[in-house]
Image 1 (cartoon, one colour):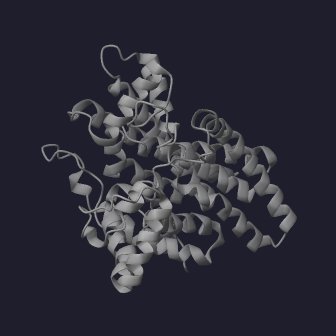
Image 2 (cartoon, one colour):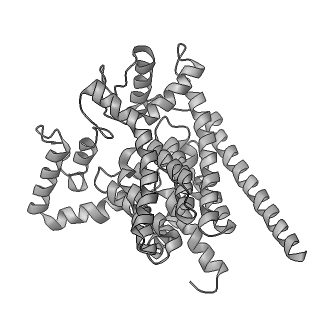
Image 3 (cartoon, helix red, strand yellow):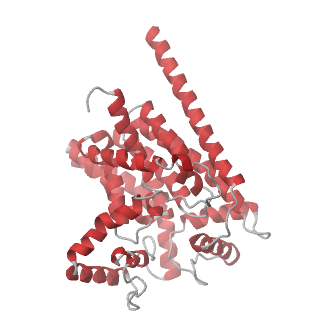
Length: 394
């Protein structure tokens, strides 16, 4: 009876703590939506707005183009199109509605980060990770931007939660659903596509049962393919060729091919494909191997993770007093990423953080690219804190 009462009290405390964390998350995001004056759309945000209106009025997807293309994957434009369709755009784009929906998705992301932390270790890890995610300034501010980050991170965290369950308690329907969510995430941002195999490489290393591993992976692959097929068919029918994800890859890769941005203003005009960029990078390594190696490792890493992506106008002082939270998560989170290599329960999350970073090192570096990796580092940091504070040995 005493044990049951303690368990009930613990569950009650966890539930109350989670509700408080989610309430804080919702309050802060709505504070930014309703109190911060948003600048006019520019850059990618403006291009998405134009693309969506063009899709709803002319019926085709074309990014920065008056004709169909596959320069970007369709996930985020279709998300925006749904909101534009519901709220209308004849009197202007319904950007406030987009921000409100994204804020809600951001709060739900906090919830799934809690669930992931709880699933890989315990409720303490889940609550710590959720609290950090609730107050991390970038996550709050980004909800107001007409960019892919918030929607992608939500879908990816749902996938990650399902993937954790699929590794621990695999069932056919969970595996297929995992593949579907992974496909939805890739349709928003395709960079993580190669990671689909990582959990199942680890599964085979753990159990050495090839048939078991292949069966589970194929079920995930079915879900992924089912999600991607409409995009593939559209590209074949409309563009007359199979484009798996998007065609923009070569452009950001080229931007990252100039060490420390030296010479970036003199981009060769004959480079128009990923193959051309790779040849250009190889020539650079042949000419100055140490210089290029430094750029493609610590050089880009310092730019991506060295500062928090938080370009809020300085007149708004919201959350600037916890700016150092980024440095804290970076230090402890990367410790957790490397510690995960010897701890199976968090190994694939740590590998995801490492591999996603390696993928980003291929492209032009910006601290915006850290956004989708930070939830993984937050979970890993919370895991390490739990180990250090609540366990006798690590």
